[in-house]
Image 1 (cartoon, helix red, strand yellow):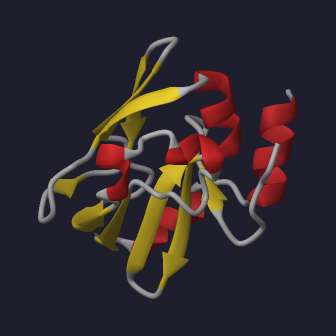
Image 2 (tube, helix red, strand yellow):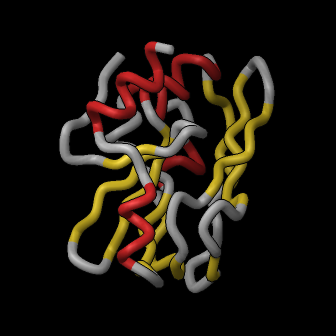
Amino acid sequence: MKIMEDYYYTKNHEWVKVDGNTAIIGVSDYAQHAMGQIVYVELPEVDDEFAKEDAFSVVESVKAASDIYMPVGGTIVEVNEDLDDEPELINTDPYTNYICKIELADENEIEDLMNAKEYEEFCDK
């Protein structure tokens, strides 16, 4: 299982990479492995606003469909349109193939997330 050092994680296995006031959001390696072969990703719309823990995307695999929850609140500024045609990119590299980028509403919400070490311990339980 691959865990990125400078990322933050949720108990639902989403990841966040912060770049200034922008947060890049995707699903973790643990999540993509558990889901199996991904066949569809429902992307949010640019300019949509989400609160922390809102469902903002759906990822469908050959096993099931899973809601993806916003780890921090904000406004969508970009979506990874490559996932429309190639949702399986998440299986290839879930950290390069993010779902969306948001402008953070409250940077302090990052403090509620797990760092890489905490996430690794969480996954090992």
